[in-house]
Image 1 (spheres, rainbow, N blue to C red):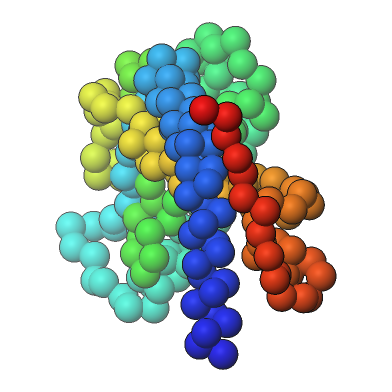
Image 2 (tube, rainbow, N blue to C red):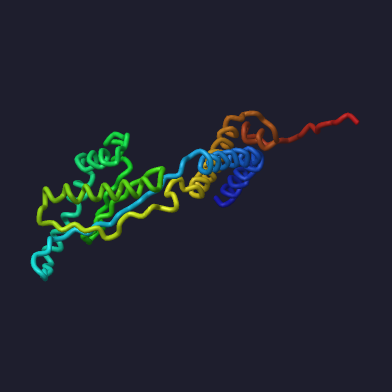
Length: 227
């Protein structure tokens, strides 16, 4: 069994060695294409985010914290997240900022993420313009707070951290794209090499004869070169 495995591994390495330049060429090509797309073709996308805390409106000078009430608002955060993505809030923000975009396309760039086991909701918006990303999400948060009061008048929604203009893009992830392209290039080139080897049925060596006929080779005619 070990001998068969050794022979198989030796054959595999021989196949790879025979077409090593094809593997290198394909891998370099995919990596280079990915680098060109990541650095020169794909436009950077910026993401701005804003953190919001949701609770009960204060009544009087002091409010006694109730554990059950905290749990209730933790569960309500998911409902508030759906309100934040409602078309009413979206269309109000689009109209206020004068954006020339459809509501469905706008929704593709915004996310509302409830933070686990907290009363905090994080809103994020992605745009190719960093200033637009910050302005849009801050305006969206304001409209969300106004709209949510229609459904929960006693709710107290406060902004923890207003969105700042992002300095660095979140897309494309250049080095990750290049790494993925390199791995794919290696996998594709290896697959192509083994397919080519499988399709090649020509007899080139005495080993090929033994495999094909299952008979030992008793003699070899040498190649004579004219001097």
